[in-house]
Length: 280
Image (cartoon, rainbow, N blue to C red; front, side, top):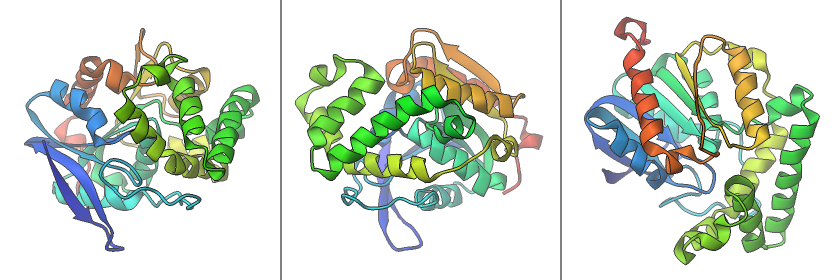
């Protein structure tokens, strides 16, 4: 795997990992992550796949996100669009957490260029608000409001601690190496922008039901309840999807269980008949 850069239509430059040869697979990482989060999954996929893993805006080798900067619903798609172009054929799209939310949007915008979709707990929490799942929505909204307030005041370390604790447990922050904590702190303004975008979105299940790409849903058995409810809502809208639960995994299964995740993705991709893959 080697890093490359691409230039989007607005002439901005972005970085991505590219390696292997064969069926193209685009992997979109979670909030506060980077392309390197997929290393274990890429290794688990093995040969026969060309894997492309971008650093999403504000992450990895890309420029930091400006504090207070707004994020539009399609802003992230310029990177996905360019990677899809580079594949030369429809690609298999995989997204985890925030990357899953981006993947959901991408498959709706570029349906003929996506051969299949794998969603690992996409943070489409607006589905809970719009479906009147108010207890779960309030839980997430409280975290988001706290995060937005802390980063607006420049309290990025406190925002990082709360964010990591919610998703990974109370001990996770203290157990992180200093360099990893510093990397997380750097990303807090971007995470705040993603929370603000969540509040602005009003996706509905009818829109998701219009997705025709073969879809795999992966959920951790020990994940947060709002994340599980989002998965259940998507599954209800797409009843023909495949679904697996990794019993002892939390929200971060691509990092904690990369071999299992890779095996599920590989089986899903290989199950898509060639004649059902959309034309470019």
